Length: 242
View 1 (cartoon, helix red, strand yellow):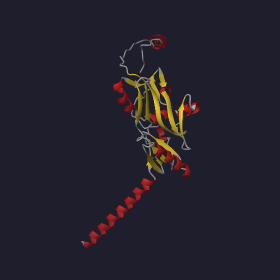
View 2 (spheres, helix red, strand yellow; view 1 turned 45 degrees about the vertical axis):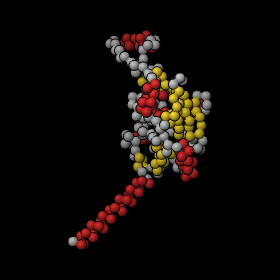
View 3 (cartoon, rainbow, N blue to C red; view 1 turned 120 degrees about the vertical axis):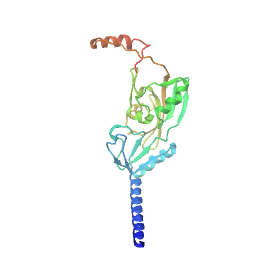
View 4 (cartoon, one colour; view 1 turned 135 degrees about the horizontal axis):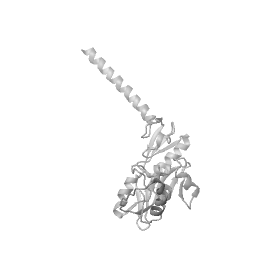
């Protein structure tokens, strides 16, 4: 009986040490995948911060060690193509403060880890709404800008149309103000750039009035559609498409 207990203890300790060692290996070299789970990638580390200077330090340290940076929000990009093997995943979800709302100008400034749901909840009591919305509101603002998502309203097609400006932390650790007037070349490159040009820190977005829509449908022949759409939709300011 004594020998059996001794063997059990040794076996337990061996399994524990082996499991702990495996856990440390996985912790130091985590395998990451997006929500599609199509392309698991082994990364060097995962880092996250809600402090601008700490994010800047991550970039500067990565430069010293020649570590590539991958930027992640909700990680819904198809195929996981933003993940770089043996790189550092910078998780931006905790960088999610709503910084300022200008009701008169209908502008809101948010950190890039903020979700669209966060913004909608915040601006709804003020009678304001997003100009461009995806079909889901679970994504981060930075992630949506990085792929330049499209909206569902024919008046405002892609997200870039509702972006006033943003701040960019580039690969050298410099923070740049980017708009259509300031660093305009980066404005079109970063929006839709999949994080290749730096980290989007905070974004100022144009808002619009919140409206209650009434759905109206019409049945017509397919060859009548173009003329009907031009006359009764495009030329009628009271009609909105969702």
